[in-house]
Amino acid sequence: MNSLLGSLQVFEAAGGIKELRQKSYLITGYLERLLLSELKEELDHDLVRILTPSDPEQRGCQLSLEFPTKMMEVFDGLHKLGIIVDERKPTVIRVAPAPLYNSYKDVYQFVKGLKKVMNQVYAN
Image 1 (cartoon, rainbow, N blue to C red):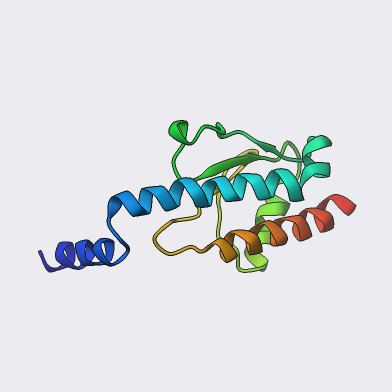
Image 2: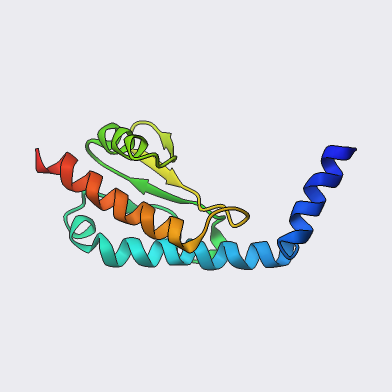
């Protein structure tokens, strides 16, 4: 019971479920916009694709990114930078900015790190 109470207090301190869901919409939308602007060349060359629907009503707080080639190298490169993502073999990396503890700065740093890793991986 104490752990449940502790969890409820954390949600309350964050403004409640409604506020967290609103931040989820916003931070995931921010991630999508950054990916579309900062990885335009990579997207245009099909090195990466965003599989998750753009409509916030059709997605949660994560985006699935498909890497038709070299997904594991990108995944490993992100981990070397300390960026934690989830992989779904053979070609998908899932990115989930959690509204309770991730910031917009975290999202920006992720996209910056992803671009750096992709430049290294696809330069070879």
